[in-house]
Image (cartoon, rainbow, N blue to C red; front, top):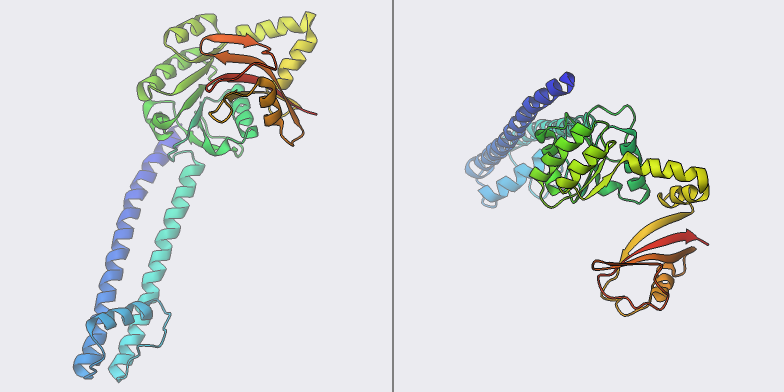
Length: 332
């Protein structure tokens, strides 16, 4: 991690130098433009006596000549004018070469910064941790086409390319701010250490009062503490224990839950919120509407209206705006 910190400090110094480079190039370009325009005006208008050349036309000529475009609509007519044109063309090449080099330097610096995980992010979904469950979380989000709005905060440099943008740091407040935790709508904590999960839950809530926090923990004590901290969703090892026990006397249930918990299989559990346009239709009509002409079939398993929940709602149940349903989506 010390290497990352050193690189971060060096990068900040280079960024300050890059900003100075840009300012120097701009000043050099403007100065060169005015110099060439003034010289052309003096040679062609003052000395050469051309009434059709004023300073504004000279500015236009200098800009076109420095860019090496050379439309030919304004040309020198004196020997000194040709000399000025030659100098302007050479100086233009120098200015544009400097500009390209500064742009390339900024591009490479930014690319290296992102590769090292030292950049900044502003994502709707933030995954924090290095555990195997984090990789599974990110993979599932990618499968649901959420990779563009997902960011990953890691404690170590990834060994392989990641499917989402990422930030590398020590899970400190500065790292979370670089990751844009203030703008996140969902934060998922999947760390191997429960103590870190507790600390980060407090830190995330301090920086973002509105984000929905999901935490994966191993102990029941940590789960209770996170519940007191008003963490929205808490997944503990007790759930895995119940699932493991079910594999003994109801293995098909375990297979079913494993299949529908991911978007990678032939079935998936999805949540749907009834919109204004869908208000007044029945559960059966909604199932047919969601299926449409695709090869997918939907079946409502749960209807939540306010604080009231109904499992396996009847097909004739009328829906209201804001109703939430859990549906089983399966291929025909």
